[in-house]
Length: 41
Image (cartoon, rainbow, N blue to C red; front, top):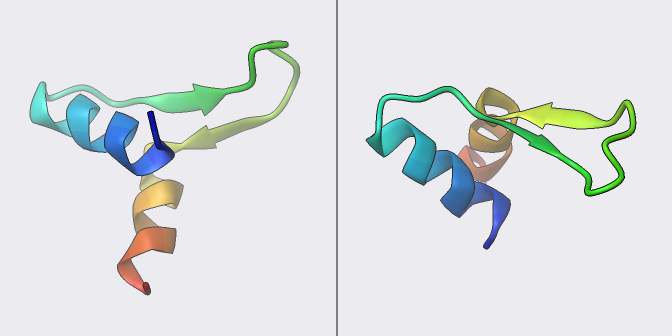
């Protein structure tokens, strides 16, 4: 599933989501950042 789709589905259910790697290290990307990046495309 793409980042944009995960975030879109979360919004559809009224949820706030944050993307993480499978390793669960320090990296994360909140959905508001994904949305900001896709708006300019």
